[in-house]
Figure (cartoon, protein in one colour):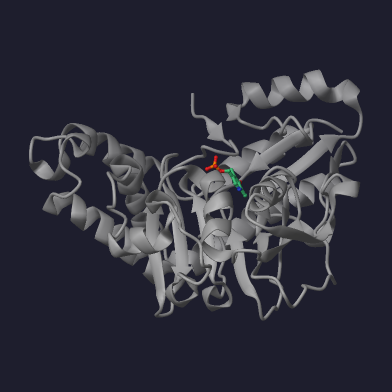
Length: 352
Ligand SMILES: *Cc1c(COP(=O)(O)O)cnc(C)c1O
């Protein structure tokens, strides 16, 4: 039976990519060797890494002066690497607290210096994005989370600040057009919209580095990874390869402008059902609704058993909400086809 994969992460990947990736596990480059048993310094793999980096640059329209890295440790490692590399000794940082991931990020930053939470939507269960806050002029950087995977909220615009702007884009990178030049550091765990778990994408403006006065352990030092072109140690070869294939798939589809349009269509379809069907209630404030993760609950819990059976029977996977929010969450990353959203909406129409 065909599955409709609404999983929040690791997430759906294009079927074509999964097929190419499984072929490469057995026989990479027609060389009768597996992708995962050859040297990461061999020409075929160095080409994979170079291709992945150049696709990131091309798809995002990256201006000059930025480096692209594929690291390990997930976005969670970036919570501390960002602070380690950007917060001066006795420095300060500002954080916009929009959910679990931003609170985890700011917790790590507190190990390195003073953290100023410029605004938080915690008191409302993180169902909106705070606006109209001011960023202190003496902080080393402002950290934001562009899409809140768990709550289904998304920043529609980015704060204007003369401080460095750091963004966790784990769950919406490559899903919509963004002016990269506004950012100084972007990071994203691959497993939300780019590839399998194991690789973390880091995009960093070169001129901001090396200014903290800190001694940074090699594995946590962006400058070392830049100098070694993400090969300071063995990179996560499979995750980088599959990410490269997914980025190539995205390029062939017409790039970010094309996928953004599709993502908007998918989200509009589901939000319309949530708004028009009295059996469902949306979780996030309307103006802050995410295109990637759509959170909702049943208006009446008596429908839960029926609804759960219907979507399970329809082959829908991964619709359960995060344990901290409850209800339902439909994650609609790039590779999820419109057809899957249509199936979900058809199931919802049977509850009213
Ligand atoms: C999933 C997620 C993370 C954590 O990613 P890991 O790679 O598991 O560390 C961080 N930030 C956001 C926005 C996420 O969606």
